[in-house]
Length: 142
Image (cartoon, rainbow, N blue to C red; front, side, top):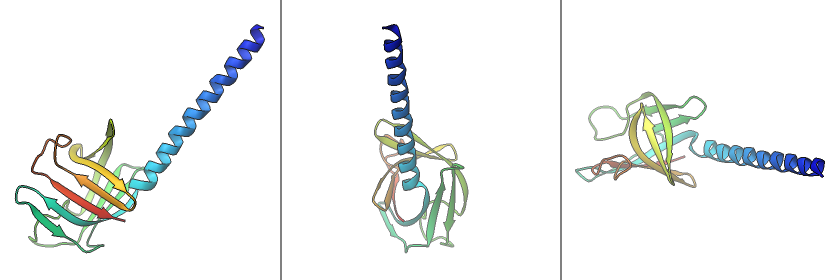
């Protein structure tokens, strides 16, 4: 009787462990397949002046590398032509999950919350997530 009980517990433990590992892998893969890669900054809206800037695709790109937690920004807007997000360069980034909210930190500073839908990415610097009520909303497309 003890052998049957022990064998049953062993199989249940292995089954639960395999299920958890599988779920973690699927979440990681879907996360990597969404944020990872190149994004075109197409709009910046808000701020204290309530700006509304629109950009052509390819003018400003952000490329997230999840394997190294680096963000490469290429900003092809030169001169003083308004708010264009980050300057060209390489930045470190991290993602912090807070309940259902995903927070983006760039160079160890809060940059705002973000969400993705299909091939779009929205970074929102407003509200309690970034501590800024005069922040910007940045829109990206793949």
